[in-house]
Length: 332
Picture 1 (cartoon, rainbow, N blue to C red):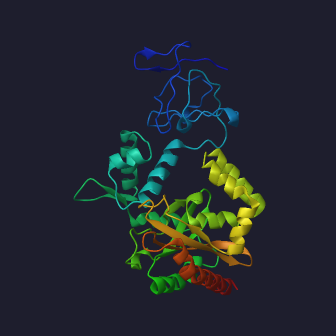
Picture 2: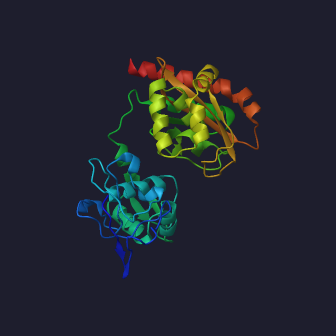
């Protein structure tokens, strides 16, 4: 171990002083580090990310830590913090119509000056703009260029569009096509804009936490056993809900969902209106492999879970099957 005492302002922390523990989201002031710390770890915003050589002893700001002394080394693959923060801002703004600088700063736990510099950079590059009548910011159409090089095989979005429109016209409820990516489910297309029953509009690119939505649970259930285990191990390292993780690890849970053919998720908390909506989701399966999820959302106060399953689950599964067949024809 390499003992050291950081300086900030004129106050000096000695080795005997009680270490200061920073809670998640709070940034540490730039301090005097041992020479073995690479200068590239010090971001322009004046904060330091400390990563231990042993993953079990890794010291990260977002987990809260005491930094009275630490053995610090630079490993390959350590992310560039400024880039990570910029992507955080883009992801956040993609979920919201517009936000003020203070709202952005609080939402992703960044200092206001850092948030200001990131937003100004994104404006300069054309990915964000400031509303002319008020100091609120929003993304521009330029963000679509970030996905222009990504083509889903068989063009799932193009194939699924007429089917989800027809399903929305039939029931009135919004329908989404999504895919699971890492820790999240990403909306690829939706009919929120054409549904008068939708409380909010969730556009392509909007993400939901994997284990907190019906589509995410569908994705997990249809993963192979080994792949599902690796994903859940990763989520456990990220401190996801232990009860839900244990449930998803149960082989009988996955088998039950596969046998049922859909997932019902009641009063979702990860939406813009927590607890107001519930959803049904079915997999889009091609040759036994999941290509995406088809989800129908409804107002929990207007339709009970039993009513939703009785009236919508069958047509939802049929629609998912039709999309899969059309997708197979497109790939032939």
